[in-house]
Length: 445
Image (cartoon, rainbow, N blue to C red; front, side, top):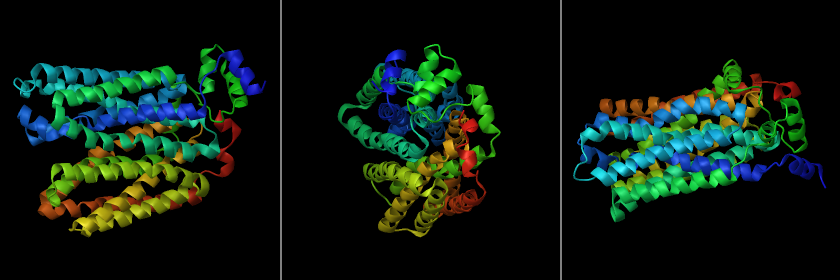
C-alpha cells in the first residue's frame, strides 16, 4: 500500500485535485450565473414594475453588491476552515434569493406586480448574487489542491469554465421566458441551482490539510501528512490573519489593480454593456444583441484555460503584459469601429486579451502572496470585481456627452487602462519577488 493510500485510510480522507477542481468550478459556474439575475429580463421587469431607468439600473446591479461585499471575507475564510462550508453558505443564500423571487412571481405576476414589490426584489437580488462570491472561495480552494507548477492550468480551467455561466443564462432564459413565461423560466433556473448545490454538498471536499485539521491533528502534523499526499500550498493563518497578511503585501494591490482592469472593469463590465451596445448602436434585435454578447462571454471565458497553461509555461508576468497589449488593440478597434464586422473583430480581440489576462493574474497569486492565498484571492476578486461599478457609469457618460457615437468612443477608457497595465506587468517582470522568495519554505507555511 502506498503512503498516500495509508494516509487516506488512516485519516479517512476524501477527494483529489481533479475532483476538487471539478467541484469548485461547478460551484463557481452556478454561482456566477447570478450576476445576470435580473439582467436577462431587465426590460420586462422595468415595464411590469413601472420604474425609472435609474431604479432599474440599481435593480440590475443588486447581485453585484453582494459579490463585491462577500468575496473578500469569504475568500479569506478559506484559510481558516477550507472552502466547503463557505461555498455551501453562499449557495444557500443564493437559493433563498431565488425562492423569494420565484414565489413573488407566482403570487403577484403579472396582475399585481408593481412598484410596491421593488424593495423585496432588490433584497432577493442581493441575496441571489451571493453565489458569485464563490469565485474567491474556489480560487483559494483550487490553489491548495494543486502544486505550484500546475497553478496556471488549474486557475485557467476554474476561471474559464466557471465564467461561461452568465453567457449561457443570457441565451437560455430569454428563450424560456418566451416559451413558458417569467415565473417558470426562473423556476427552471432555481432547479439548476438546487442541483448544483446538492452535487457540491455530496462531492465537494476540502484539501487534505483542512480535512486533517477536522480530524483533530495539530497544524504541523496536518501539514506534514498533507505534504506526503502532494499538497504544496498552505495557509499562513486564519481568516483575519490571511486578510491582514495579504493586505500588507504590496503585491496584493498590484494584482488587484490588474484584475480590476481585466475582469471587473473589463470582462464583467462588457458582459453587461455589450447587449445594449449591439442593440442601440448597431440596431440589432435584443435577441441578436444577446447572442453577440453571449459569444463574447463564452469565448472570453474559455480562452482562460489556455491562458492558464501559457502562464505556467512562459510566466504570468510575460503573459499578462502581452494580453493587456492585446486588450489595447481590441479596445482601439472598438473605439473607431462603426460597422458591425470590425466592431465584432474588436470584441473578439478584447475577449482574447481579457480572458488570458484574467488567467495570468491568478497564476501569480500563490507566487506573489504564498502565505495568504485566500486573503489575496478575496481582495483581488472582491475589489477587482468592483471595477464593473466604476467602468459602466463612465461608458454611460460617453454616450451622454457624444450621443450615439459615444457607444464606440467609450472604449478608449479600456484602451487607456489596459496600456497602463502593460507597463505594470513589465515592471513586475523586473521588480517582482525573486524566485527564492516565491518558493521559500517558510513563506509556504
